[in-house]
Image (cartoon, rainbow, N blue to C red; front, side, top):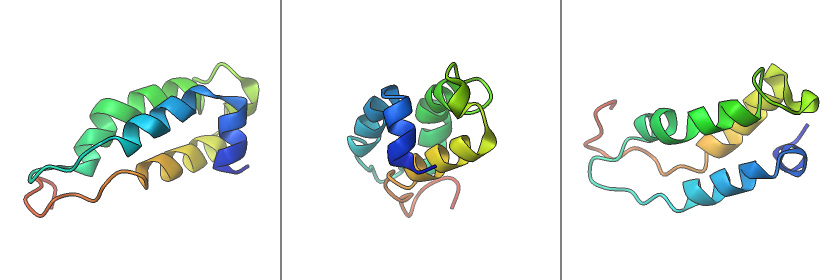
Length: 83
């Protein structure tokens, strides 16, 4: 299943994608912190074992959504705490 197919099944992922694309990098920006604080909780509710749509209650759909959305975040800044 592709991310486009997953978004067709769960349109709320479109808003998460828009929100991720709106993220602006600061001198101390950390993609990991941003993902786990702002986006992962929203994604988990829509795709994976907690999804309401049965077609998305599997780890494959979750992995595709996770990897696709996370890749849209800006890279960590040089002064990021996880670097």
